[in-house]
Amino acid sequence: MSLSVLTLVRNRTEHLVNLLEGVARSAVQPDEVIVVDMSDTPVRLEVQHPLVRFERLETDGLPLAKARNHAAACATGERLVFLDVDCIPMRDCLGGLSDAIGAHDRLVCAEVRYLGPGDASGAWDEAALLANGAVHPVRPFPAQGLEQVDNPGLFWSLAFAIRRSTFQRMGGFDERFTGYGAEDTDFGFAARAVGLPLYFLGGALACHQYHPSFDPPLQHLDDIVANARRFREKRGFWPMAGWLEQFAALGLVAWQDHTLTILRQPTQRERDQAMSFWPADGSAL
Image 1 (cartoon, rainbow, N blue to C red):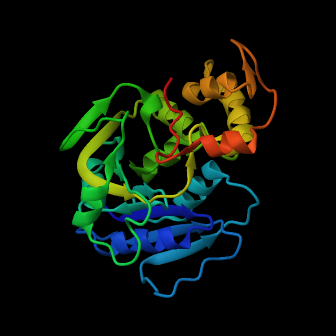
Image 2: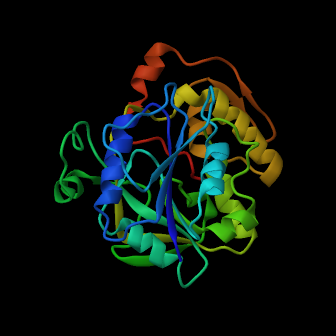
């Protein structure tokens, strides 16, 4: 079955260049790479990649659900590998993900290692990236092979694979989730609802390129609150509990059993204090 690699980019051209270099070095080559470009100015690459096709999506925000659905709609491959633009696939990542959904219909997440500032600058070497990459502190992956995950809330969208026919059967990501937060958690629960098991795949790695992050993601407060409300209306419980607890502790929101209300916006000092090496992870349920 043919393989499509899908990614979204918004004003991170350097990260996209490294992702595409990782794809070019992969042991298994995809049939195409679909790049949904949401950048303020359309991306122009100095080096042309014959497998890459850009699909422009004009937007003022970050409609992740809509953009991923658009990427999937543009794809022709039966096997879809979604990569966050910050992720550089290592040599065996694409092949491992593709094989994992070949014989069995699954939702499969690849392990991601986290790079520090400058680790992927200029010409990079896979061994050096893996040596520098840090393991995520709260998402354990097997050393090799597949391990089934019972909690669908642990699905993450940084690097995952799914059959296109299954993605279509699920209806893709729910586009009622706009902006940042909860759309991927909802997707994990949607997969469980149709009987699609979630697996973590070890040994097929991607390296996450550094960018300034906030934990909790204070810059997305409005989106997270709005999407948390949507999720609770749909699923009957609150998602992103870790983030909501932190927002409440800071006095940014009032969070009770049935209500979630923004009380104020974060101060610049609070934003500065929330700067983190780790990309924010609010998936704990």
